Image (cartoon, rainbow, N blue to C red):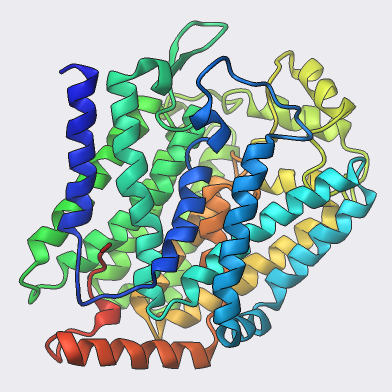
Amino acid sequence: MNPQLATLVYILLMLGLFWLDRDRNVHTAKALWIPVTWLLINGSRPVSDWLQTGPTVAYDNLEGSPLDAAVFGILIVAGLGVLTSRRQQVGLFLRANAPILLFFSYCAVSALWSDYSFVAFKRWTKAVGDVVMVLVVLTDLNPLAATKRFFTRTGFILLPLSVLFIKYYPNLGRSYNPWTWQPMYSGVTVFKNMLGMTCLICGLGSVCCFSAAYWEQKDTDRVRHLVPHATTIAMAIWLFFTADSMTSLSCFVMAGSLIVLTSITRFARKPVILHLLVAAVVGLSLYALFLPGSGLVESLGRDSTLTGRTAIWSAVLSVARHPLFGTGFESFWAGDRLQKVWDAINENGIQEAHNGYLEVYLNLGWIGVSLLAVLIVTGYRNIISLFRRDPEAARIRLAFFVVGVIFSFTEAGFRMMSLVWIAFLLATMAVPQTRLRKARTASRKVSADHLPAEVPILTGHSSLL
């Protein structure tokens, strides 16, 4: 098939995925497309890369692209405009999420002792955009449907495009290792690990929707809703193996298993069982990665150095000089430190520690790590509590929470504007009790108007149109 025909086929495929998953009885605000656009950009390439028709422009590591800054600024302003119209709900969310506010406040203060304070503050402003987008999703009239559409809409676009790029546009979807000349597959992203992250987050969104639709035995459109998510999951798995992204694949299998187990039986949703399941997943990851002689990492085709990550960890720790406060928000990978790390590992281009917890330590010090720990503990408590009130919403949150925790063992999962961080932030955010009651009331009204009484909308399948 020639590239032009393949492009047409894949465009029709994407439209078909949206069409099959539509449900006129489930409504979300059109403003949801603002955070979806945010996710589309952060899950693929900067706008400046998409519009670049000539040689790639090497923007300064500190300044970045003015075009990208303008696009993110427009999206943040648009999101703030939506939140202004929902200021009562937003106020409830902010009061219920003091740990998140405290963490981001400390990030802002840390810009003061950065070597590049103005740059750090600009990056913090973009990071606040993550919170804005999550709030746009969660303050929707139907937050569960909005959450699912947030991730599945992104997957319906980025995953087919990644397959198209890899198979028919190799100059866009592939690159070559400069040392071994082995092909590396990146799809719509700029690097294979980023492609794995996009498949992980979007794929889990479809796993949640597939699971919910599968158990809706009375739904006459059940098969039609299963097909698009099964297709998306299949594409995600193909891309995992094509890109050889074992970290993302492992996280996908473990988090997906949690979704399935908590869907099959109420027994798996009991707090004690949930604690045991999460402990088993996290414990298995720690055992495989950090216990010498486990052999699990080698069975996945990786060596004991975790593909050079141990050398990177040693290098960055030797350069770190501010253990309590860190170097300032998103400031470690700048200036002389960057070159020192490159010299230590004898490799240029590395700009992350390949460990989310270490990344937070480098930029925010032990204080930042402590605040992150508070965020993790309170977020987990929020999720477990939500299981009693809304199991389906809690299910998808638990999956993204576990992904954030274990993905960050070997990748910078807590880095702002990454898909894992955005999903983790959404998962840990507390839902005010008042907001939950309003969402249930609105949901029941829609159900009474459009659906049989025995099919509650908050526990049914989601759709995208």
